Image (cartoon, rainbow, N blue to C red; front, side, top):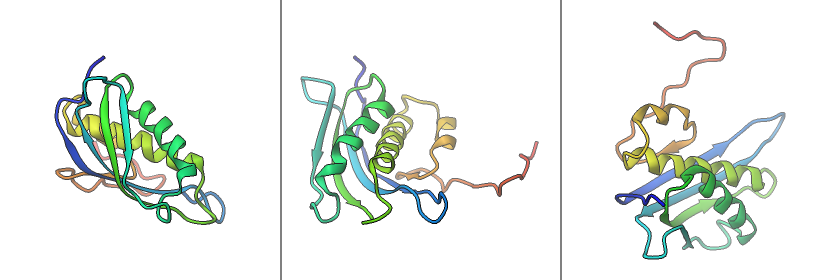
Length: 140
């Protein structure tokens, strides 16, 4: 199993979807490191329950597994946030998936162009993603 080659800290994901009046909401901040000897995904949570209820951790884990694919990593959740009405498993699964993909881009395991698909993620060294208005064509 491939391993994350270097640490990637301060990966920030803020999922805010508007489907009708409200939609999935999730906020995660995570540090990624190469895993310990066991490999696989190691997930540690240092976020108080008031900011990230334990009920969302399985969805975060599923999303991280999807985002990291076969790459082993140790992940420390350092901050989070939820909304009493708009948060759900889907939002936290999306956040986990995007955080995992971001760690792969930032560590060089995915090409930089893959960052274009990461709509809600920032990490040190990433320039602010540009959003085009709906219906606008790409400049050629």
